[in-house]
Picture (cartoon, rainbow, N blue to C red):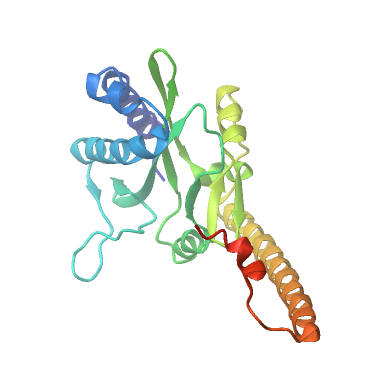
Length: 235
């Protein structure tokens, strides 16, 4: 794991960088209008990973041909005491407190069980865009904040419960200390619950299709008509 002093140094340097960057004309212009989260996300990712690459020893996960993996669990991997740690760079906008995707739960669990990682870092640049632009940078090990995530086995992603997470951070709530074994057990609980709910939802959907198929077969009228096509809303 990254020690607390180094983690705070990373957070502070990123905070200082973005405090300066959000005042620049190009950023102010980019932050105008609607759907700004999508426009800013790639920009923040590129500049933040670039900052880390300049200030620290870093690597990217690559395939057998040397190309960067587009779905690596870390946007960049940062070295500390000879071990590389995955860092997920995210952008948040004050008006959007949904449930952003974080990482594949199975990929995260696999990496832990294979002893490839012992932490999973979130570097979040939270933007408050009003008449002026402010930012707050959070740098945390998400394995310490599993009380603020949810999981859906459909897409297979751990999602951050952003409103609860940012509220806890602003109130200075310190997460309970857990061993790495406890964190793995918590992830397994999330996976089991998600798989159970997915199975229930799939059974419910299958039962509904069976009901509709029975009705379809019983009617014995299989002709397509303008009325049956009306719901297609063709124009």
